[in-house]
Length: 410
Image (cartoon, rainbow, N blue to C red; front, side):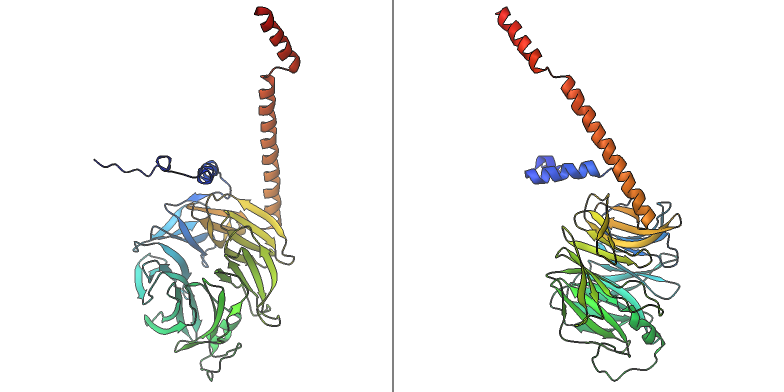
């Protein structure tokens, strides 16, 4: 009778893999970030705009969970898919609809308040890797990007595809709408002349990134969409895993674009630079950067890295402020959430945990102090252990005396 095992001890392992497994086993029980353990690998997270104590988390097990960060309780679970879900978006209108891109090449949707499954969007030829929603000319649109290198635009109410955009040569990894273009497009009722220009008034501007190094710009409308320029923005060396615009109001200057890349960097691309969208800040990391957030009020940039760390950076200077350690596998997503009245950042990762980190000056100061105390306690314990070992050993004089006694006994 054939027997099967998944015990790694029964297979050949390199020294590095054994050491890494031991490190993770030692780290996995830490309580940093008040971990909330879910049932599978966590691939994406977004904030709940209607209650900032909650986040929506996409799982490799094929479900989405709405999690209360304060209590750690799961408020609702959205089910149906049997393949991993790796990107999320919420409709801009209420009652809200939750959208999730799936490895089964489709986008699933549910009513947020009830968990009832609604439309399912099919048409992509490979994994769906990015989803976002926007209102243009009074019509709410769902925009999706997939590993088939195609961006598709859907009319949510009519439940139909309206555009398929091609220009990328490799899989789409991220989509983001320029928030400075959404207000005019939302209010506008007319359609422009179709000229490809950056400040296009007849639609919103969409930025997309792929698994090569390209960022492309598109004009999106309910009737048709087009690429704004055939020349991509080239600022990274390889895959751009996330594009992000900070929160924006009409009273603010239009925000710059932030990126996260597998070339181990996060960039701030200035829209006022010459040429436009040139990097004016570079945040260097030791490994692939998976996600980025910006909090203008706190003055920080937050990044998630493959090295399991969450980093806080000074937005103005680009200096590293603090590094949060807690995850014991790769961190894949970040989202804002409020815990006990304090705004912070939630991180999710391959280790299946949801963790919350403070980003204010007071939160970071407390984290540094706690880390200092833990380091002192660790060093104190090591000194005590070393002293105990020494107590159990003989001095040189004692060894000489013992040797002499043994010679006499001979």
